[in-house]
Image (cartoon, rainbow, N blue to C red; front, side, top):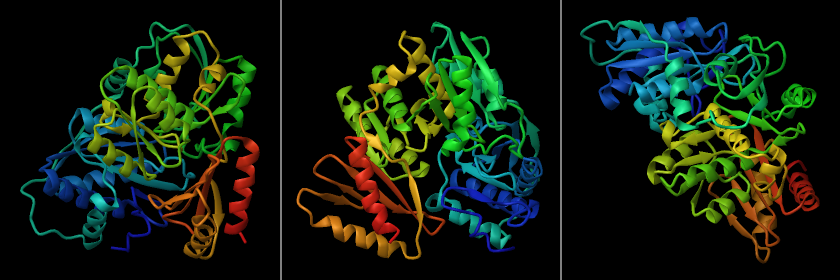
Length: 454
């Protein structure tokens, strides 16, 4: 078996098909995953789902062959979003594997794996072992049987569960443009939102893994342009953009302006705190400082974490947090097995908008307090050296605090701050800057970028 370290990354499997991985590799990973979850938790079955990419069905079937060869059964949930797979893993209490490359281009595919109950599997919590066993391709025990494959469509159950968590039946009628980007939102949105007081205007709901209209990556502003134009053209109340596997959602207000994921994190946090079933809210260290401020103002306890879903989910489990949000528009809910679901976050925003009469721009203004740069990537030859230079410039200045929770975070006495951290997979430094106003943000951004790119 080839070296799998290039495709089995920190959180999942990801690579070009068939150049970097194929059905044989998927079969080997399936066998290793089966052995891992059997030893880890005594699992006797695994649930799978897949997105609309051309390679997803053959890869998921090869994975299933690997699983049943080790004596475990496979429940195939079929076509679905990543959060539908998490629902299946949670509601059926089975380990799961989702075949998707999320927002990556058409030639990519991948696997997102989880334990029963949608608990995460990352590099330090099982993925390294699965990689090692898949590469070795042999196991110490002989299975007593070959497993069986059955099919189970959970889409209706998934929709019913989400609708039990957020009641949209009594809101004022809203006109909603949804850009599915030819991804899995086109499969799940019609079922979840059916029959509600929403006039849904669909954009690119046709499932097409070649992404003929734009990349299914709403984090890139270029991929929001069609949605923004449609919202203005339709006179819509709100626009929603899902990524390829529909586990993330981005929000556009009635003017066509993008609403920052930090503002959405704060809005949903306030709604979850109002239920009175917990006070802890997780946010990663790149979200706006408005998030912990607003959480405290509403009686909550903000907890700051590193970037990345495995860190968020682990901290949610440790603190029994009710909700967590990331700058990248991943939103995690205790009521959804601590997993991320763009659909549930979207439903919270629709409820918040529809339960009162103001437009979305006014509603979200209360949650947007500072000017932010967004994430800026710089290709550098020696990331540690650049980080050291930036640290040296700021560390000894009066009133400045520095921490190393995830990369380098520098807090300045005037309320401005920045985080600089290295990519796990590329020769990149990622910069995020926030300040009390746009001018100060731009000044600090340019100052730090000047050092990084010197």
